[in-house]
Image 1 (cartoon, rainbow, N blue to C red):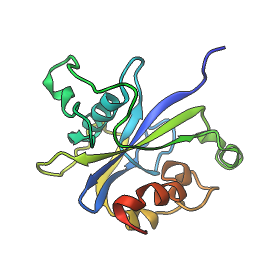
Image 2: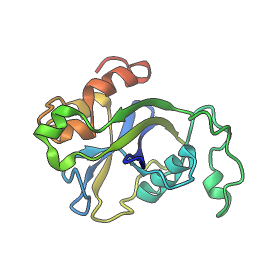
Image 3: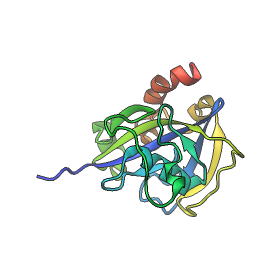
Image 4: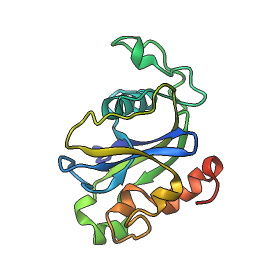
Length: 183
């Protein structure tokens, strides 16, 4: 029996006291109109660390570093990946969530897929912190927001709202507390 799960990354890009978030656009298969982090699916055979760097650059044009990883910027050394630390660790991994939540299956059946999300903290690598909308139609806009500002977004605390599954605030409050305090 094959594994039905797809695996994706949700990337917290930290720039001082803010995180980069965007509004999902009409070309997204799921979650259009919802606030979300940069991220996407892990390609077959791809290291998670490289997925993080690739997805962030593809979607925003920004370069990120993963704390504790020597593989920062390997994507920018050409088309081949020259170095990746041990595949047995994922720098910046905060949590893993399963998107087959029973409440989601009832309240937002259109968003239910067998999918694991890896929530990863990165650090903005410097330079001008202006994200680009590189995938027109998939993201309406990008903005740097504090966790407190994100927590006021519609539906983030309502399990019956699709937004709850794109920005799972109960989880985010727990995993981001060491970085941003209470919000």
